[in-house]
Amino acid sequence: MKICITGGAGFIGSHLTDLLIEKGNDVVVIDNLSLGTLDNLSNHKESRRFKFIKGDINDGPLVAKLFEKEDIEMVFHLVANSDISKSHDDPDVDYKNTFLSTYSLLKTMKASGVRKLAFASTSAIYGETTSELHENFGPLLPVSHYGASKLSSEAFISSFVSNYGFQAWIVRFPNVVGERATHGVIFDFINKIRKNPDELVVLGDGNQNKPYLYVKDLVEALYYIWQNSTEQINVFNAGVLSRTKVSTIAEMVIAEMGKGTKIKYMGGDRGWIGDVPSFNYNLDKVHKLGWHAKLSSDESVKKAIRYILGKS
Image (spheres, rainbow, N blue to C red):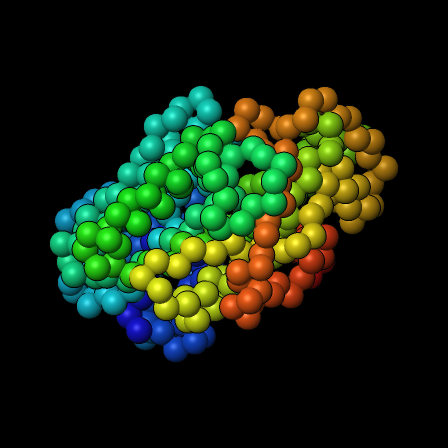
């Protein structure tokens, strides 16, 4: 197929670009390079199956021209603000980069006759709860602007499916780690220790407990769900059944760096306003479909640490 990936030069998007080209698709990436880099796509710069367009997904005329010129058949939409804590001070960050980017894309797809969309959603839509999170869980009460913007995006995707004959795949990601990451707890801990090898300051009490999914497992899940679910709207959690505590991540980073760093916990049950300190996915639906992650949460974290440190 001829596929457009929005945000395809970023952490997850570039891995998805790799996979879709490997599977024989032609891929057009549109990215404004605010977080993504062309280095992430360097393996494809000579490929006839790949094209890169620098631009903002909110630029409707630009995207419409791209769709028409390239004869796009399918869109994987990954553009979003990826730093949840950042929008606490400025909600416009998520309004523009997470919600409006989706709404603008939907309008352009409608006008251009492109009717197939895979959307990168998030566990943040579920809000803060001790319940096991399955796809029909509710009510959905996000505690971050990021989660609210993703949930609003899901709602508009659903209405476009009903009103205009779209077909959609919504995949709700957990915490994702691995090669090409630009931020996150592992990234932050390593940078903190490099600056101060004696002490690692950790936000919260260290008991925050979440599933961490390896990025290559994630893009394989996204591809598998797209290929194997055929409803007009298909909603799936993708993740791992295991979880990893922040205190465990801190200890793993220190061990891999070979430092005698002491950990200082700042207290409280979370890292920042809008952070969900613990959640637990139900993955029965995606497992029944036939997809399982290859790496556990701890294995994903360790692999990501070793990559950032240049050990793998």
